[in-house]
Amino acid sequence: MEDKQHHADSREQLELALGKQLNALISAVHALNVKAAVRFDSSLQPASFHIIRWLYSYGPTSAASLADSTAMDRSSISRLVKQLETLGYVKRETSPDDGRAILLSLTELGQQQNIQALKEKEHMFFERISALNDNQLHEFTLILRQLNGFSSL
Image 1 (cartoon, helix red, strand yellow):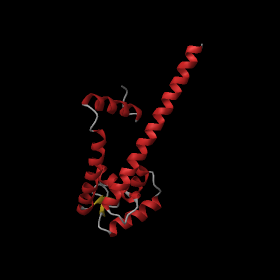
Image 2 (tube, rainbow, N blue to C red):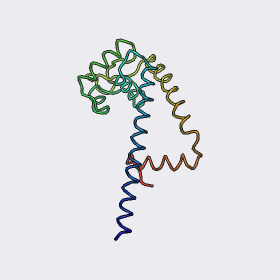
Image 3 (cartoon, rainbow, N blue to C red):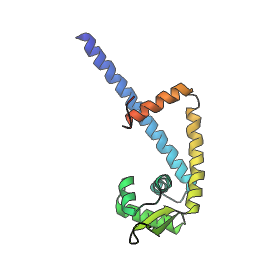
Image 4 (spheres, helix red, strand yellow):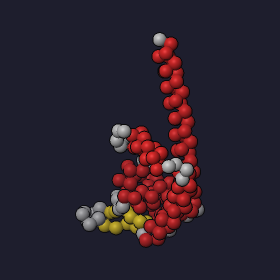
């Protein structure tokens, strides 16, 4: 019985240690995102950069889909997109599938600014993982996939 309790205590300590490290990772990623947002355009809020990154990764979409996909309310999306349009980073176009629908997408300027901002972020990230050998990186990637619910080990 004592062995099971020790195992449970040990497991709990391991889970707490994992949680602490995941929180540190999330904080570090957030800090990198904020730095990348400043690099993109220091006059913008980080939430605007989140919209830019989403449009860059997934392509044109409606404002409603963008709000759902980024977990932002529609009024925030509307306000931020208007600012991004004014600055020349985002444009509105009629959907080729439905002439009544409007799609948001990045302009060439928005794409180029995003690429430059992400290069700096990638450099900082790659610096952090450079000490991992290929096997460690592979194992870490598999574990993260599992934690993210994409596949089992």
